[in-house]
Image (cartoon, rainbow over all chains, first blue to last red):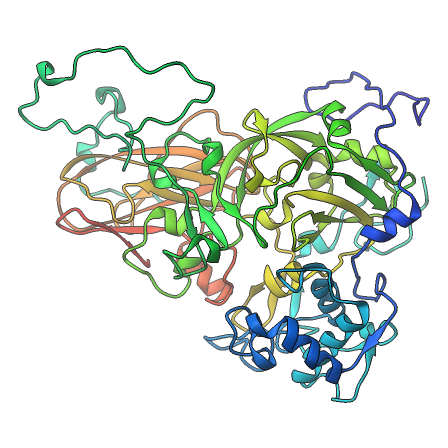
Length: 197
Length: 421
């Protein structure tokens, strides 16, 4: 089965002008399959799971699952320090933590869900993951001790170092997208809608 | 910018290469049979029948080559369970291709043991036809091969703030390697799934426990050069390099070359994962940080003589490696007076784009203190900065993307040591 009747010339060095058949490799995933692997979260909150949690619950989850490496209260452990460091980034001894460095709160949920706890990533429930996020944000003075953090609120939390990053010009401004040798997207704006081919 | 070439002390005694037979770099630690005075050919052991032929070609018992697990800047000689990377012994190697088992390694959650029959690659997002691919699917597609370097963005990070004189070139520059990679062009897979025109970024995610994930900007250059690799130096990838498949983005920092690749998702902007925000960003002196500084800049290092080696007065073959994420290395200059004057080194052919190039330079060492340093220039005209030029630009907190010139000092006793320029 071929998904295109036309022969597609591949842009493979050494292939010359020869056309290459493009068979229909693989299979289509089911929606449930995609959902089970589609764990990424974006800065605008796309990809966040339903749920929420409080700093109080997060402290319990953290002490049970995280403190062994990161220290009680996120300081003094054998792995990354998670709290403090505000005002140190321009000094000779910068301390990069969630509070001092991380630009997006959504990244916290994404990272904890995909990579933590180190020995058993993916084992925390969505509610417990939000709770740990809430606890770490509270320890860093970003949300109050009674503030619940969840899918509806995480993306709107402004991190202290949100404006601390300078994206590389080369890669943050993509050149016109060329598909089938036609320029189909405007230059200099990666988010501008483009005609569908 | 022109390259100033001045007189070098002793340069009138520079040796013509043609007069030096077998002037290869000293293979430190590798079977350098010494030609001690008094040896005669009669003392060479007699020929004798060897061992049986075998399925695997092992190294000679006299050759000792090994990567070096480390845990971070200044955190060396660690238990392998605490290591975050393992460095290539580039001071012991010749040529340009890194032996497969000695390719540097950087892993964030250990090396997973993946059964290729059960591994799947999901490609989805802003595409017309999401796809699940098996390794057999990928192996059946038209593949390409390319020799390219990979470099951990932390390569060189020992020398931002101070110089530990006990460092070897394996310590300072062991996080770069060059291999031939074989795989499927990203463009082929993008066509297969019907990548939509608004998908200008792509998330690549690994099948390791950490699920390392990076946003890749889909520039023309990256679309032209990136591949999903299953082959490394003619055989399947080694597990430490991502078996069964990994992303290869020539010229871009090692971390985006996602290992144990299991998901590609096309999207309309970067995801801002932990690795591209909290980790692989470069803090500048003013407290702001450079982000998505993916391209590895023009670099070079003298691998011999280098840190902790010992030389003797007389002829020295200076040799090293140069590479650039911008393209081909155009020239390498060597200085034996700490960068005050420079002479052009020779480059071994072929010099491939975005691959390490081997350079050489003949030097007569007169026994007086010297500081040797190399400086590369790529085909785009990018010149490797001195350490001070780099620091003047970005400060000393960047941690990553150190490409300043590496200076080795030679004292009167011939000891070679790491120093700051």
